[in-house]
Amino acid sequence: MDPTYLASLNNTYELELLNNEWQMILIVWYSSTAILSLISNVLAIFILIKCDRFMSEIWKYLVNLSIADILMAMFSIPFTYTSFMLGQWIFPTWLCPFIQSVQLCSVYVSVYTLAVIGFDRYFAIIHPFNHPIIYLKTHRLNVIITIWITGILFSIIQLMQTRAVPFRYGDEILFDCKELWNQQQGRYYTIFLFILTFGLPISILIFVYASIGIHLWYRKMPGNPEIIRDSVQWQQKIRVIKMLIMIVIIFVVCWLPIHIHSFIVWFHPIRFQTYIGYMSYVISFFICHWLAMAHSFLNPFIYGFMSENFKTNFHRLFCMNIKKNKKKKKKKHLLSTNTIECQVGAGNGNGGGGGSNAVRMLGVVITDDDNNGALCVDDDNIHIAELDNLSTTNMTTTNMMITESIISSSYDT
View 1 (tube, one colour):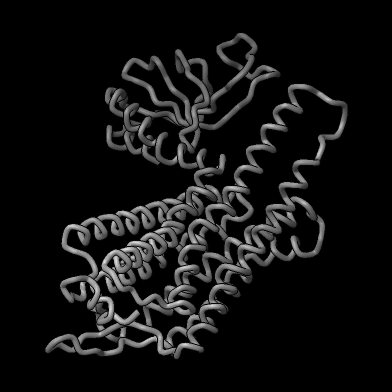
View 2: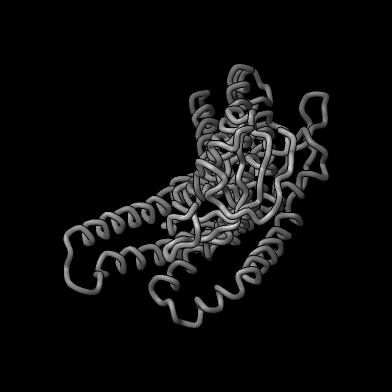
């Protein structure tokens, strides 16, 4: 909407749509949203690459989703609300088309990665031996590249049709970052974007997740009925179905309002006659825009932190390190290590000799000065056994003295 027209309705004829107090609230609100999105998505990428890629079949898609959401947090959140709030484009003019094209590309990649994840799960659960799931499993990287290429191609339209257009405000020449469509073209493009970034993706999500939910609801465990087993299975079904419903609802709640707002602007432009109508328009835009941007930090929680594997890896990477650091402080008296062959299990009674039920594991034993209270760990610092005396083990190397800093480092890996 024309910034000079909006300025004529705010009682002071100023371009800035809100007073300083409201501007500070918006700055804090949107900055917190961007920071939360960056932190949650970077954390998700780190955990997925560090651990979850060995446990999750769709970890590449989840990493790609987080990358797209990071781009959204960097290019969509700061620039859009700032230019609308101030009533002008305050950044370099060449950034205007670039920012708008990156926004469209990041939104496209994000929503179609969600759609591909839905298709992947659909074929994996309902049609596990069909050709599409075999292709998706072996060509996930190709699918991701295809999403990015098509997203870039569509964003070129935005790049070509967006400019920082100058306008006069008093004695100043300011700029408004806007699309160059005429009224009819703008309406067609709005419909096109709605179908491309909302209509088609939400149709895919509803179809695949409804199919998965119905399949899980009517699926029965083979064999004779068992009360405990069937109860556990029923609870798992309910939990999965609730999550699938939540994915669709959150997508609709976050993205539908901004599309409705765009339709109103292009198809039924409102000419406000009162200040109340003006404020209603301004507030509605910021609510719709923030909901769309909020989807960028909700995705890591929906697809990451709600996953048991993801939460387990998060706990192992961060919580266990904290416990190890606390444990390290309590063991400052430890001075030496021995590489040993730890024997866990039943022995033959001769000082830990190899019994038939014993399990031999190569590890490192950390002891105090008196060789008492030994703790045996493997290469990944996973506890193997606690030894009262080193005579119960078979030494494979000689003792070596190490400094406290080296011992401490064994707890940080």
